[in-house]
Image 1 (tube, rainbow, N blue to C red):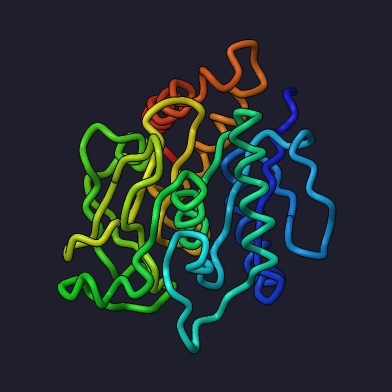
Image 2: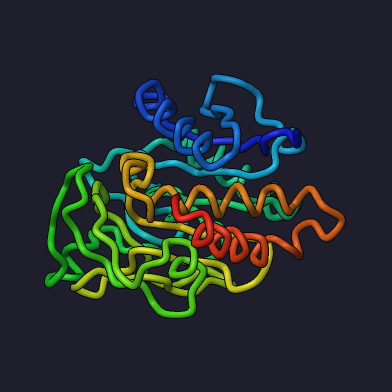
Length: 250
């Protein structure tokens, strides 16, 4: 039996103890194994993993994308530095990446993009919710990796964020927005696989569409082991979605 792909997962030092078990379950259900990374916990070895998840947590320091420091915003500079290094190393190695909430924002920033520090102040028509329950509706653009992976044109998602993508990073496109126009998902248009979602699918593994995001990542990670490597990941994610239809379950 082929070994399950190993996925490195970053979490916060403060909340990792309760978030990582959810990530581990989501990755396992998708056919992979998860390895916990956080500042001060273990040495990160990108050569030992087949893919990466950048998880949620505190806001990203605005100094990383030309923003202004504000009073009362929770920051974690050590984690910022760790995740920047992980993403750059993952890009260099052609590893597939799934960014979740803060992780989606960090994906955008590392690729040269910027963020809205107070996203709901910019998108006043976006419904403000702060819950792990799927109470927010997002519209997915047609012909995107996200649409194929989730097999949906819209999703109900949770929301725990205050920042959101402003200017897109290099090679990225918007994959989904909420009803007020705020960016809710981004993705890379070419291999290797990179998808960022503003919500927390690890809290929604009881819903098939959200489990499928992890299945796409694991499929891309498995493809990365082949001779074609990073050039076969998007095709592998698409094929996983097609086979998921044939299986009839997520």
